[in-house]
Image 1 (cartoon, helix red, strand yellow):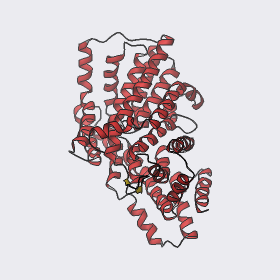
Image 2: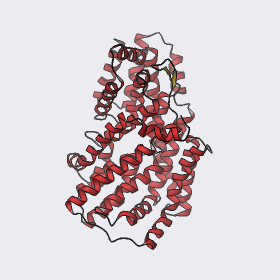
Image 3: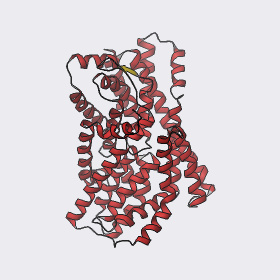
Image 4: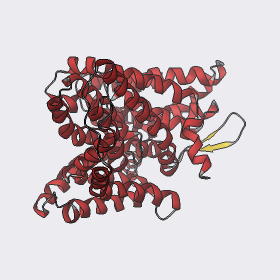
Amino acid sequence: MNATLIFGGLIGLMLTGMPISIALGLTVLVFLFTMTAVPIDTVALKLFTGIEKFEIMAIPFFILAGNFLTHGGVARRMINFATSMVGHWYGGLGLAGVIACALFAAVSGSSPATVVAIGSILLPAMVRQGFPPRFGAGVITTSGALGILIPPSIVMVMYAVATSGMQVTGPDGEVVSSASVGQLFMAGVVPGLMLATLLGVTTWYRAWRNDYPRLPRASFAERWQAFRKAVWGLLLIVIVIGGIYSGVFTPTEAAAMSAVYAFVIAVFVYRDMRLADVPKVLLSSANMSAMLLYIITNAVLFSFLMTHENIPQALGEWMVSTGLSWWMFLIAVNIILLAAGNFMEPSSIVLIMAPILFPVAVKLGIDPVHFGIMIVVNMEVGMCHPPVGLNLYVASGITKMGITELTIAVMPWLMTMLGFLILVTYVPEISLFLPRLLGMM
């Protein structure tokens, strides 16, 4: 009954057009003050401690690093390097777009930032080269989603924060803890590379079938020159992933390092950004960080209410008692998350759904790291399908296409992503292979 009232109130407020963060907070406050005896100072304390987690500090730093890289010419050099390597294949510029998105994803942690940085440079070049606008839009919109799967990933940090501190008894009676940011980052490497490869194969096949343009093969000297110019941006991948794996610094410290490094190469090495432009980038990053932190604060309060009313535990016990198997549960989770992606953005979905679904997954014997990667892939798909796929709106602003036309454009790549979602859902080793190999699990 309480769960019905809580979710009914939340959905009702969202249907009025109220921002998700305010709808979350208002739902919690109304229920707590009218249906429970929880003291108000507990609510105030929860609001304050909700963002008092070391892992959350990674979010503003990764946002800042991504903004420096977006404005600092790193994307253009990555595109030139990728084009020199695969431009002579069928759909060369499209393949270069997939590779450039994968490389930029590995330094930005954000899908919209990847779409803007790569798309604003590559899409006009593809049109000039003779590619249909829909082809270029489909490639960049879907490949940009790699930004939240290839580490570092802001959505992975969100999942770790949403489930942090949770300890649930598994099917064999053992106590299972939530996944760490470091485990999730390493778990995202293999799925990220696999999805990038599948999107590249889809791009090549469509270009080959339609005989789209190819560029002249670049010489070794041209490739070396492109690599030399892009190497400062590529080094950031080594710093972040290598630093976390070697234990030199934590994911949060890696985020701070990446922000400082991105500032240095944008302003002093590449010199594509003036010092006078830095305050504008800082303000833009602060605005985005404040928005996400406000959502996190209210989502933590919502999670507190769920726990206080024992809703996740009751849901888990009910599902186990009905004989629901783990693979049936994963089908249900995929359907729920894809449906939620129709009207919510990824951060909100993860922060609301992860604390509810995580205990059930653990009770059914599903690994927390595998479950986290599956949720992230669902968020990727959600960013590319209508009506509120965030990447669609970002790409629409670049291409001047309508959402309907973009939906048609992304369909071949979206089908590839859905196929990959099924694969990563039912083959846990895709996600767990690398963390186990590195001794992180």
